[in-house]
Length: 245
Image (cartoon, rainbow, N blue to C red; front, side, top):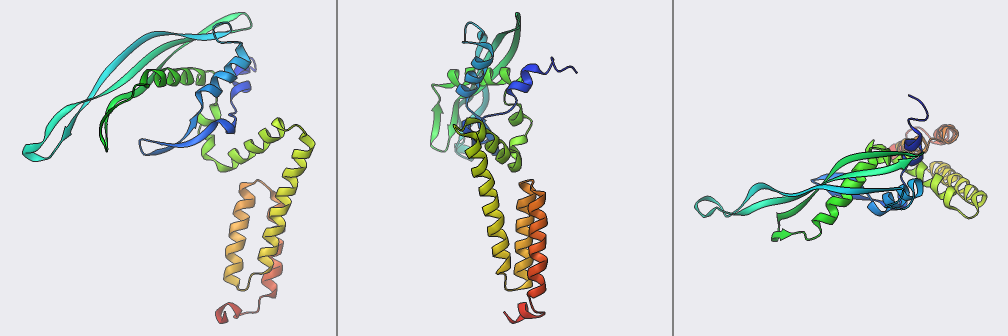
């Protein structure tokens, strides 16, 4: 695999955390991506929509789903079917004088039953188009970190936020210093709290908590300092004191 093959991917794989949010779809927790933010990123790379990149709708349809019933037993009756909206697009882009094209589908529920009864989503076509564009761009690597599941890792997201805060800051040096101070404040607070532990059990629980957090933050020097604080406080707690507390 050459660097040239991954040229676009490397430029767009990281997602700006400002344009994401947590959502629940079909009972699953997901990271929802802003379609407008992905369009903006594509525009930065390829140029304005319609000039450097764009799409053409090549298929659109409404698909019937399963039947919807109300009532029970002899009173059970069908009131209709769920209907979904499907859109197929051909997304095109230009890169170094070459034209590329990607076909993708977008799907949205159009007519379906809710806890309040039947409903119809009049914006289903727009949502299907956004879905298709996002999926097509993902084939080029846009927001690959989300699609690869990296946003399920809290450590990755926190590190990404810190990197982006520095990148977007007017005074980058000041932001780097602020983040450093924030990390040191956390460490000092952890060490101070452990130093006030009354029982061996409390100390152990604090140690586990802070070691886990330092590991998540990828701070090996913090782990060493917390371990030292644990051993120092452990030596001062009298045997059996936790039983008397």
